[in-house]
Amino acid sequence: MTSTPATPATPKPTMDDWGIDASWLDALDEEHAVAEETIATMRQVIGKPPADLLETAPIVARPGDPLEVAEAEITCEDGEIRHVAGNLPEDFPLGYHRLRTPDGHDRRLIVSPGRCWLPEGWRAWGWAVQLYATRGRGSWGIGDLADLRAVRELAQSEGAGFVLVNPLHAVAPTPEQEASPYLPATRRFRNPIYLRISEIPGVEVRDAEDTTGRALSEGDLIDRDAVWAHKRRVLRRVFDARSDESAFRDWWWHQGQSLMDWATWCAIADVHGPDWHSWPAELWDPRGSAVADFVAGAETEVAFHAWLQWVVDLQLRTATEGITVIQDLPIGVAGGGADAWAWQDVLADGVSVGAPPDAFNSLGQDWGSPPLVPWRLQAADYEPFIQSIRATMAGAGGLRVDHVMGLFRLWWVPSAGSAADGAYVRYPSEDLLDIVALESHRAEAIVVGEDLGTVEDGVREAMAEHGILSYKLLWFEDDDPAQWPAEAMAAITTHDLPTVTGLWTGSDLTEQREHGLGSDEELERGRASLLEHLSGVPADASPADAVQAAHRSLATAPSTLLSATLDDALAVERRPNMPGANERPNWCLPLPVPVEELAAHAGVQAVAAVLAGGLHPERPQKKKAPKGKAAKKK
Image (cartoon, helix red, strand yellow):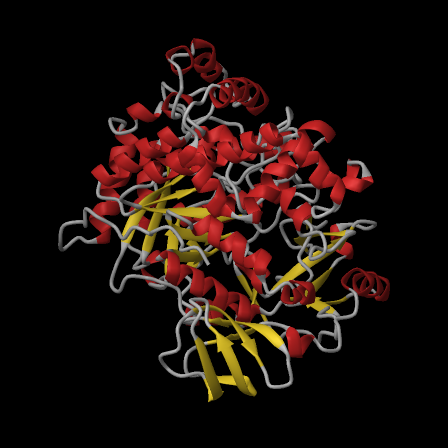
């Protein structure tokens, strides 16, 4: 959710018993009081935390830490029983345990290493990829997991150490497909639209060589509705014709209730639509008898949606083999989606997540996702958060947390008002950061936090303490890249900001004007501020020269990770997403070069050479990067 340059804000306002800040500081450090009406609305939505919350909520600690209780019997996740008084032993196992006190209180004990996993001394450069845009000759209208494998192979051949990919989370399986990767129906399962049909177990020759599917790539835009309609017909045919399903059934059994909930939601959505609020009321309760009856009568449909996840899992693991793939975790989910249905008692109703007004958007922003209620999240043993983090990390080796400030506080927007009528609500950040560290440690996954926008004091310090890399952009930073911190991912731009070519030629400015995103003066001033970061480039330089200059500057950064977009390497003018331009084909713009031709493209070769040479000018670039392993079942 990139919106504004990173700006530190000073001391935290006073919050009440509900975790609501009574005031907030904007990017200019000006204080704004929250309306009493807004505070009253937020309190009603949150509900009064139970009086015994501190006695029943999970304890999150590190080995050697003092416990919040004098003595306890702890049942470790491996079944071992330990008795602890005072501090946790220094050798206490990491993980998710149960703690019982002499007075009968039973609560979860989460023991974290406190720092995310990161190989000592490792540095790498890599490609940032919008997978849907990265189509190949075998794609059916959209970049897929075989194309991700091709990018991974390209990266490895060039000496890159990672690939950063847009969120791959699943949306509703219904005919009208959600285009934004940042508004999924779930953060626990992945989108089967990314499947390569020809590589599915049991596929027949006629489906593997489907010319109609390949013809979908001939359009100038990505038509997700057409792609999904065609892929789904073929996928269902393959599913119905399968003969040996033992491997799938065994995998499904090990996924537990979470996959059953997802597959059930999909099957119901096929009948009643993608928003569970519009379903018959008896289907609102995931554990109700009506849902059980529905599943009993729709076993094949439920199994089909579970099978899709099995095939996605197979292809994703092949696509990411041998390299770190950093997957993006959106700030939230669709309010009518599967996670919102399964965890409706933990999510807030009547509000959504957004951002307050700032210099770039005087009206503020509403991102449309319902937030988790902090005390309800604690009462749920943090399980919704744990599952989302774990599932996104699994099998790939990296995680980028979108709007990482949301682990500390979120701007809640009341449904009856505008984004400017919102307020900040605080979260138990220390617990959430320790959970991220534990999951990172278990999955051997590096973690990057997107800390762009208004960042209050203490956030970056907490990130550094927990081993979460910061995020630095050439477009936003005043300091020379050579002065940027080592504990960061360094990049030029993001999916929400101009490409180098779009900025240099002025075409991005023209498009902003077409969509009425500001006055001419405001837009010209914004472009001029970004062009200052290319001040050393001659005015008559070509876009390709500007791209190379930007990457030569980026290559001087000492940051742990250096990231370049394929859009910039290919001199693409249009950014993937232009916030506020609702009539624009956001998230639907394919790259102009097939994935098979990327390796021979002069722009791709030039960017790779600049970053590889800048990373280790005194010694050869590593050929192998740390590779995460699948998170263990808990």
